[in-house]
Amino acid sequence: MHADLSRLTFRPAKHYSGVLAQQGRVQLDADANEQSAITRHQARTLAADLIGQHGGPYGATGFRVEFLKGGNKLDDLVIHGGRYYVDGIVCDADRPPAGIPAEHEPTGSAAPEAPEDGADGSQGAPAEGAWTYWDQPDAYRDPEKPADRLPAQLPYLVYLKVWERTVTAAEDPEIREVALGAALPDTAARIKTVWQVLPLTGTDLGAPENPTSDQLRTAFRAWADKRRAPAATAAFRTERPERTDEDPCVIPPDSRYRGPENQLYRVEIHTGGAAGTATFKWSRENGSVVFPVAALDGTWVELATLGQDDKLDLNAGDRVELADSAYTSRGEPADLLRVEEVDLPGRRVRLNAAPGPGTGGLPGLHPFLRRWDHRAPGGRGTAEPDRDGGLKLVEGAWTGLEDGVQVWFAPGGRYRPGDYWTVPARTATGTVEWPATADARPLLRPPAGIETHYAPLAWVVGGEASQTDLRYTFRPLAAPVETVSER
Image (cartoon, rainbow, N blue to C red; front, side):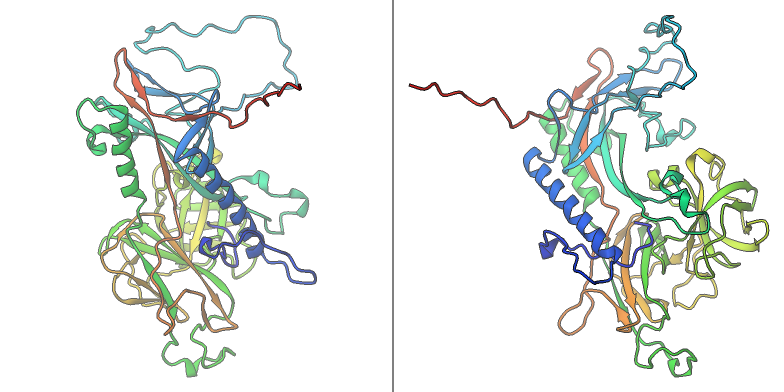
């Protein structure tokens, strides 16, 4: 969650069923967010217990997949509307209507007829209100990228990938209350359910030849469980840095955390892989410092704002990534660039290199700069900079971030881009809030996210028998009351 949070306090193992606000107390974002998390957890657990791992309501089961042979074009899939639950998370495949402008007056003329099947070598147009593989709302498939195309080798499995991400006013300006004025920060962020319909080749699935539906579901569950299983762990602590007696600040000499303010540190994997290949980045503001992009001209980036104050602004030497909704939804790390120059009157910054092709050029994708707080080189930590702009991930050793905050990555981990850990640092205690043993040894924990969920949809064969439906459906529990006749 790249939001401006004080800390995240929801712990399922504590079995809290609600948060009680007390009179005369300070209101904290953590309390309200924990109540929201408790409610969400309870609702999804109940839905998963009743429905199972996945399924859709009878008569409105969504995500029926229809294969369209491309002919002279690329192959496509039609994704029909309806609802489907994956691990208790509801996914809505209905496509909103386009709407009618106020000045439009119906003429009574008939709508143009759709082209007949085979007119261009394809199997026809998708049904009204349905998505296609190429225009589904949060997948951002690019026909120019071969990896995004549907497999040329048939058969293959089509599945549903579900996860959540945070959306702020930088990506959705409608969240911001304009009556507060441009000088004030935005208010609350949003949690968005992201669903994507994606292909999986038979080779990657590991399915037998001529598989049955049950064999396909079993093979897919094994594949999904392997992808979901945490493959890395980390721990945090604070250690009093050397030569702190010479620190001119008013921080107590015995404090192990030497920062002047309370922070929520976020450590996030940038480049995935094993140690030696994987890199990470970190932020003392949970990665929430973002700047909407107004225009892009080579290495110069014009911003809608340069920040609220000197703690949340941009300076030469800062590490930033230029991303947008497509990058975020695809789970791809953007290039980590360095701010070389800041033009305050023009609200512009010059980067050390131009962003990658296709990044920041489409206003509809709401591009933004996200600031990370590691500066390579010249930072106050012990992590070494890597060529990708991140920091080298070292396992089996404590790596200093800043002000006494350290991270430990357990040996043998496999790291995925976007995996993250958060830890609050508090000046009142002079340390970080992290679970530990009775003798104060920090405990290893898997990433706090990103948590993904999967469900099989169809086995696409092609030809007349174009696919085998792998979805489940459930009926309502309610039934008519039986009337008992009186004697």
